Length: 512
Image 1: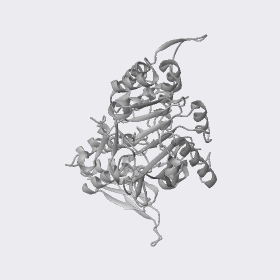
Image 2 (image 1 turned 180 degrees about the vertical axis):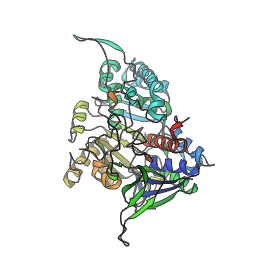
Image 3 (image 1 turned 120 degrees about the vertical axis):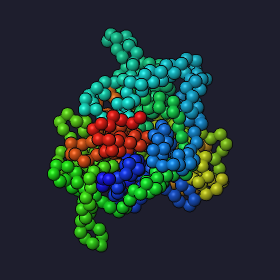
């Protein structure tokens, strides 16, 4: 039985802790804040409740597997999950509106044909077919296996783009999200749909490889799920599973150093407490870091040819990964029957929006996502409604999101846009609460409040995340800043990978 110290109580860290504990190890989680869940937070006021992180779950099989492997009760006995149908409603700048059914490729094709015109659905369906090929080519090395030493093979884009003859340039294939939209989808609204998927994950459509087709493919194939009580209820269920497996949690425990001995990680040093005034060193056989560990060790963690952290959230350089600007709305009046859970209102200037977000400015008219869950736990009674409005924005630093005037002005922009999804929004408004990347940074410690994107193949490996094992023996990385990147499902995958590496060692070849 090994002693394992886990830094941070995010979803990936807790997933690893539960799996390691059930394998017989003694696991202690050290969390600097007062609670678990990392970015999966909850805000409550006057009987209203809101997720302050992700609002929907994709690839629920990741958490089903976690619960099957760590206890008797399956996931569905620990939380109440429902498929969101329609999966999303989209409002385009020309006024076109389309609702896409959940996990039904044929239904999506039919809905797009009906709303956008004959042939639009077929083009999207053909695109998803190529996305499936990219999924089949990259799924295991990208998501289910430890990052390979020859990770450069993932630098090639797995998306089988159509070879096309471009005017004056000869045959070419779409290499980015934006080029797929322009060259293959053939409709500005379909292009906006694909752009919107990339942007919602914090990826620049102008430069993100076409392999990002995996993102709409995963959602439209495996579905979108809501957890009653919000994603915080999922975090609570994972925390409870950890406790059942006798994982120990120490809150208000700030790890300031990873202890090294005989050339390997040998424990953690905790900051002095408010009463004792002395640092505490805790011995461990393995250390699992759910936070960026570069500042906690004395040696370089990566070799020259390793995948290295990106700027945002990695503690290195200027943040470049976007964050989220969120407005929580408390509304008078009940949620009408037939209301879509999620509505995406697309920006009229897609290129302008991406140019602003990824150069450290505020977009004049962003793409806005409106979440309206049909969940009694989110509101004081049926005569009120809790609504969450979100946009992808530049991180804190390039934009000063502590500026009170800017926060209020940008909240006004999002609320005005959201009026396309929520009639009489301003008349119904009781109060609003604003959350910016500066708030995310303060709550989670993520540099600039950046939200890490999932790893993607292509782009010469620039969108990969560092391997779960490091140059320092005994130190492992888990969560959004490690392979296979950000997002609820990917965090759960990283937990499975780290547990496998510790339990099975060098023989571990990935999840099955």
